[in-house]
Image 1 (cartoon, rainbow, N blue to C red):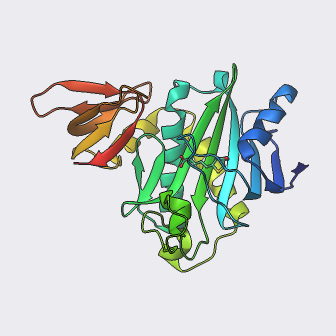
Image 2 (image 1 turned 90 degrees about the vertical axis):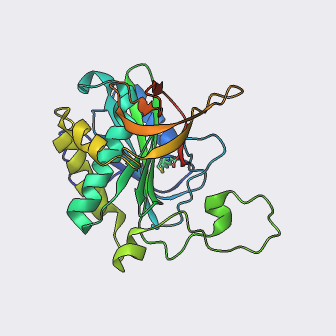
Length: 260
Ligand code: BTN
């Protein structure tokens, strides 16, 4: 892993780069023994086994097609519960898309950023005793998304078609984006917003399906339950508030939102 000479807005924190890696999550984990500063980043040009939040779901990132990095943060350096971090990262990505590309996006609980209902970014957070490892993938320069990659299509003999579930910055703006260029702008959003909890109200305002009726699958393996109700907001631990029509409020700690 080499240290690259681009300015990290987080003081004394390095930015490491690997042209090809299996997953930046593993690379970031290997740095922890050296007690890295909060804001340390590992980013990759290409990932061969990029992980998604749901086991088995992968993040496909061909060479310089997406921004793929893991940000390390010491738990003691944040002022909110670590379980809020994926939503905080989603908020920073949403702000960066708006400020840098005039792209309107929404954060889909618990870990996606969508533009026009299509996924532009995903976040995967893992924890150690003292660190949060926040992995972010942002679609940058893809011209299209093969359906097998995105939709986990099972029948590999079926003709490969283009997925309509994902979108890239190129598809929206018609311009290529250099990964390191957006990385620095995004790190500035993290640095600017992490000092207080002001971001949380803005996130709730821009939550995907806010105040809309949706089905939330609570994702508990073996005990999966569908909760139907209005998406109300986010709690201090990152839980989703869903209110049933008859008034009952549910707090959902993990799972997935779908339309009714
Ligand atoms: C998801 O959509 O479920 C989360 C995707 C997270 C992908 C990023 S890419 C950089 C980092 N390294 C990984 O292996 N995964 C995350």
